[in-house]
Length: 425
Image 1 (cartoon, rainbow, N blue to C red):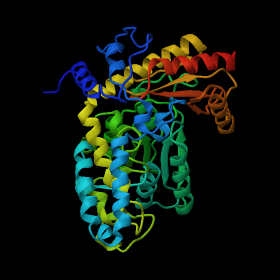
Image 2: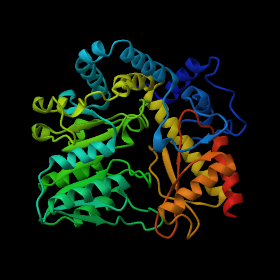
Image 3: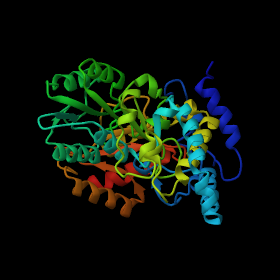
């Protein structure tokens, strides 16, 4: 039986009450705001100083979703592994395959995946590219995705289409500028675009730019019934959600470990359904090409394998804190952060999903409608106010994406709100 999240929070708080682990809660954090049955008072105790993640404490880090942050004890383990490589490279590489398999087994158990059907990859961009490379396509076939797809994923789909003569169909989810759509509406939009030429559907578990949860189970089942290959971009799912990859049942499911599962960068996984494992085609051949999946995908000569070998230390750290408690704490804090930005900076909240540790607000009309404008605004926010944020281009009005992680407090969002009120007027 799982322990209540509040109990996990209290236990984790006691464990973290040591020098450098947690400071006293701010006055703002002490304001009790109930979120899914857990008070902000509890959230404030489950806190790690930014320095515990190697982050600059003078900067307000509200963009965890882009790059993640690695706890000190996981970085320490990775440093040990790097020193081990340098002491005796021959020994390290002689034992690498077995150690990689052991790490893979542990991460697979954390994700509810079959170890023999999962391989380490650098990130989801690689995972999606490998999946697309493994599916035979020909002229006239179609790859289906939506307007919330991550940019690099769309580029990979269009590149594969160019090489094979296939086409890309990009559907627009309902909701326009406010993201007001339900999971069922999203599913109906995807399925309504299916034709006899649709061979592959690529869709997110959690949309990156817009921080929405898609109904992956419903989509996988519906596409499978139509004979369509499914590729799930789950970049943000490991660690943020409790996932059972095998239960999802996608043909290809790929997620990052360095975002929300506390692993070093770069580290991700690609889980492959049994019928596709013998057909996985790596982007770069190696000596183990003939050994098949997952070995043919993981071994790439003198690559730095330490992020993968250290990844289980990240998932253990999350489990020891109480994964459910961390998820609820972060989801509740980012909800509070979204409310602060709406109230004090006048931004309009997008529809959100309560279990996620990211939320989005709409910027004023005409602001950050292109990638270049979004990058410029994010740089100005950092330069003037010392806040790292995610600014995402969107038609008519750009989006501000907030994240919450253990090193964040309510005061971080207040600082950003004060700056944006000055900047945007």
